Length: 577
Image 1 (cartoon, helix red, strand yellow):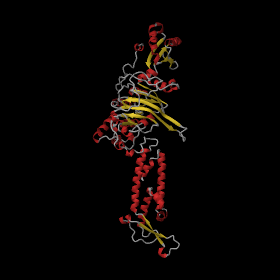
Image 2 (cartoon, rainbow, N blue to C red; image 1 turned 180 degrees about the vertical axis):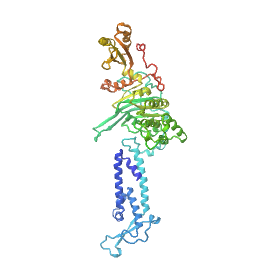
Image 3 (spheres, one colour; image 1 turned 30 degrees about the vertical axis):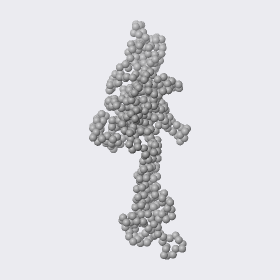
Image 4 (tube, rainbow, N blue to C red; image 1 turned 45 degrees about the horizontal axis):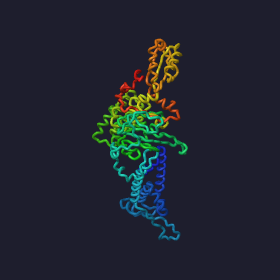
């Protein structure tokens, strides 16, 4: 029955379906056993409807009922016709020989000498062999069909996968096939921004000829049916996603709920089959080399996949064995990771006693177990307190060397600190991608705030329109102590207007009394995100996904450094150049 359950599970995709199917199999099996416990009905089957017996042989409860019936009848002092039996015990001899039963003859011309007809039944051991055969048959079918039929989850194998050498001896390691990397995207060696009209695939920052691309995504597309008629109700979750990420880099993937971030990660990790496109990890493809990719893959899912009755240490041991970590190194690696996520003091506590933040920390530790070369972190710091969150940031920064890390988050601060590149998705497409500094320069510009006296507000607004013609008001004026706050935004392509404007303010004494205070700052990543996803840029029907290319060299952030890389803070003197 267990192999039959595995076989049936291949065709079930939800827990509700499994419960319904399990109940149906249980009821059918119970009915078969109940009916065939009647020796007379069993004999009738073998005497008159032998083809049905052949069909029922593939149903394990049938032969189980047959064996139980044999044992029951052998231990009875009389047979089914009420005639006494020579012996009424069940031993090995009874199990291996054909069973005979005398039943009343149905021949109307039969006399007293042939009033009974002898019916021969297969020996009991034959039923046991059928049970073993059914177990092997359903086990093999479950193994094969589970490989080629994946339903809504997983990547199906080829129909002939049992005959492929790569299935039994999967490729391991990080080296691309034949020592060369497969590439589907065109390499470029310039540092200019890709124009809006350019249809070339999106590339990440700092890409140089000959550089090793750890991850390369090409035109991924995924749709879901939202109704009974799949042709008429289709939701596009990911639409033509293309990008590259180099080794030693962290890609922060941003997007509103439903933008396609988690669907993208599910496709890249093999949980979902893409409708179109492909992805390459160190030259291995998700459509052909998924088993090899999983050997170098670590995932922190959006929702914790943990068992409440297991401890943190037992979780680490379980995943360590699945990843093939040697027993000699497992204890040391587990202890180190638990210390890094600050769970070593509760390593022997059951996970059901953990808070939500502690469970997330355990999921993060599991993703780094086995030193994978590719890490996917789907909103890893959800539910963590500020101090623990910063500790996890430090962990991610320390471990980014020698691997590629892709993380999704709703925290702009987290993306700003951790992301070497930041990609923003909306409506299933990649809108923009680049460094934090380049994104701010391209899509947000500068915030200028002036605190002026109430009676001078009109005069200063005229001055701003004259000296900063490209500026726009970010919001309505705000009453503050000492006057009124006038907030403006200046697009990045109008930054040349900043120096002349502030030069006028500094030199003209008449303005000193009118302007109480002023400030200038680069806009935040959150403002970039809003501009790209819900601003005019997003609503423009002619907008084509733009790429932000950075310089080939980027100064990395030290762990949780309070200062951004050199050059990201622009002085007024720099803006005039």
